[in-house]
Image 1 (cartoon, rainbow, N blue to C red):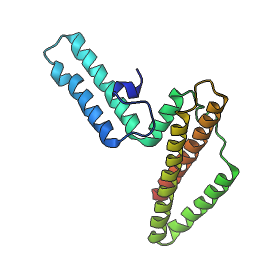
Image 2 (cartoon, rainbow, N blue to C red):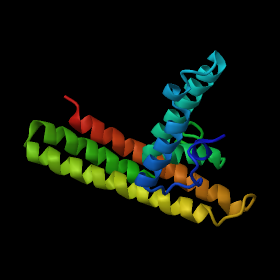
Image 3 (cartoon, one colour):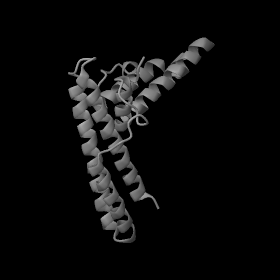
Length: 174
């Protein structure tokens, strides 16, 4: 059973956060170990395992990048180790961004705040592109030659988003 099924949600990237929270809480209430204290050892063990599974599903699905990685894997897309390349223009942009981080560290804190906002927006924009591609993928039949191309595009965007997230982390590192 995949994480979407575990929480009773449709398998798609775009998930309403409130819907996810409601599904998680509803499943948690049903299987929570506190409700199975009077049961057999097997019932309590099963309850603990199910609760851990539901918690893991919620953790992955509640974070958009992790959800995209998980969904890409379910759809048979390439993993990060299988497709590492990023467009040269993006890499040049990131090299410039790293230089700007170094300048902001020795300069004004306002520069660092502006960079953080810029990187946050860039990250959000990349995930919005990922969402759009997953929506398009839903209309491409399994076995269609174009499906792998869309999956490869999603992988490239996720690689880029991970890189931008690293910039954000580095910007805030002391």
